[in-house]
Amino acid sequence: MRLTYPFDLPTLPYSFESMHPCISDWTLKTHYECNHAGYVKKLNLILNTLPNLHKTALASLVLSSKGKLFNNAAQHLNHVFWWYTLKPPTILSVPDQPLLTQIQMDFGSFDNWKKDFHEKAMSIFGSGWCWTIWDKNAKKLKNETTSNATVPNFYKGRQPILVCDIWEHAYFCDYKTDRSTYVDNFFKLINWDMVSLRIKGEDKLFDLSV
Ligand code: FE
Image (cartoon, rainbow, N blue to C red; front, side, top):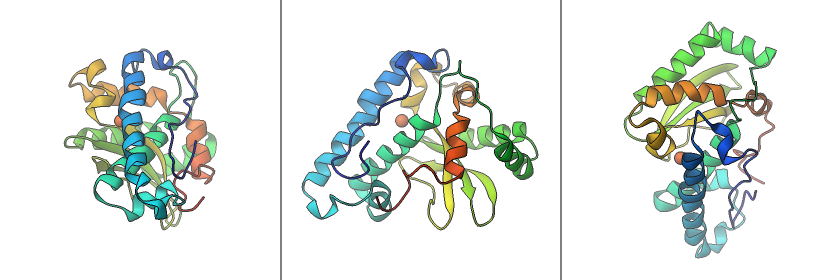
């Protein structure tokens, strides 16, 4: 997947059917091929006329833009991060020991982390994203929300490590208005191996240069 113009969709490391019963194949396919692909298409169309930005990294574009360019660049970044946060529910994945200890230190227990994340996800008014952020300077994990396309502060030592898409296109056809059950099922889909790599700084998606 390219991190500069022309942008493209990432290859998903799982099939559309593999998130069943937590996310249907229809929802996953539509989300990827229509919603996410639409953001990528619009982003490239906008950048076609802005050659001075063709070598700018995606994360840097997000930080330096506004309006339609920001919305489509940020939604591309958010969705790539979301797809790689996930793994099929049939694959067992749990936080490894250093990460689990950090979660227990910052939230009291793994269940408390889930409770706090769930509460924050439920508090989003309209569309948005619910994140866990690793603050390298404070050496602390924190759950945060953002609205619409907005990304969390990801510079000055703050590393997003996982995200849940709280736009209705991510869950309405499967759960209708039951966002609560959708978020509960999201916990079964987290790829904790990827989360651990992100804490170690091995995911380059949020890097400002490529
Ligand atoms: Fe989405």
